[in-house]
Image (cartoon, rainbow, N blue to C red; front, side, top):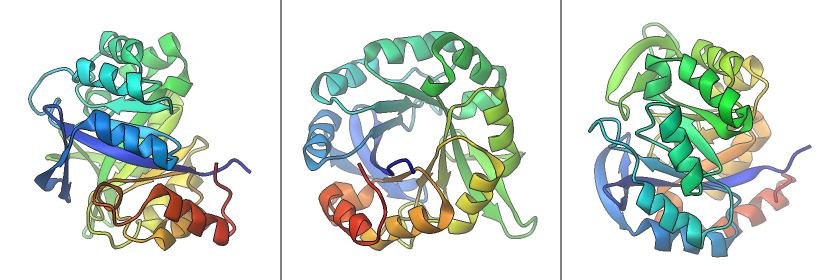
Length: 252
């Protein structure tokens, strides 16, 4: 069994780390380079860096910030936001990213997933999916544009299509759970893990160390991502890893 991964997420807006609840009411948290270095000291397994306003504002991700972060951090770095084409991917990978995450651009142009996988290898291409449960249709629906715009896509079907097109990993955020600290959406990740055979990173809802054990044990995901509980010092990576070991979850 592969060791599970603990992954802090830096949501970056114009060079500052921000965090909100359900994708709104963003608060300033601090400098991404300093925060990334602190997470490395704590023993984080990876870091996800999302430029959360790049797509909405029609600009590219902030390469300079990524270069500065990569110069200080030596764990794997996934970068998303503002990726429109293969040249954007190349710039980010050259700046120090190990993987690139595509969301809105992949929905608009699914061939982008294939093109990236063919050029850089599918291990470098992460399909990021922001999803919300629709109680009327009883389905998880895909949102784009930083969670602002709903699409007709079913999240489980889109995940399968993304993997078939070359995505080597899924980063799936439950918008219903984002920032609520009420636990991960286990039903969502159970459906996803039954549907695809690539690593899945769960995002949205972490509030206690036990929540990480819960999603690893009961939903078969490979990584768990969190932001606010780590940013505000409510939990440390060390504390969560201690709880995971206590619960029999293999960690790095």
